[in-house]
Length: 150
Image (cartoon, rainbow, N blue to C red; front, side, top):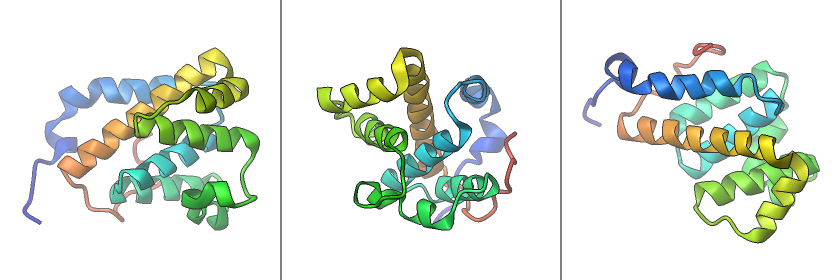
């Protein structure tokens, strides 16, 4: 692939607000490991290799099992995830695919409540933004170090 813009080097002004959202989400009451699991799932949907590498490494650093990480794409068929995680995955998939029906909303609001569901949605839309930046201006997967972006 032909070299493209290095968005980390050239896009700092544009990305400042996206980094600000990340700082806000670090203060969210939603479990950090759950947010990382959701980030991984959304990155699978969007085929973002850099983000898959990043979030897998972060999850492993948090003590997540390899089995749960590699099974996320088949979360509905496995017994490894809690009801809360399942609601988050269903919500993440619906929001990412822009197909948010009443059933998935009812399940998500029951698990998260209003404020947490807003935070979860913000997290989902933010990882979608990062996925799209990394697809438009590819970053080589495999180079991420745990905690690299704070």
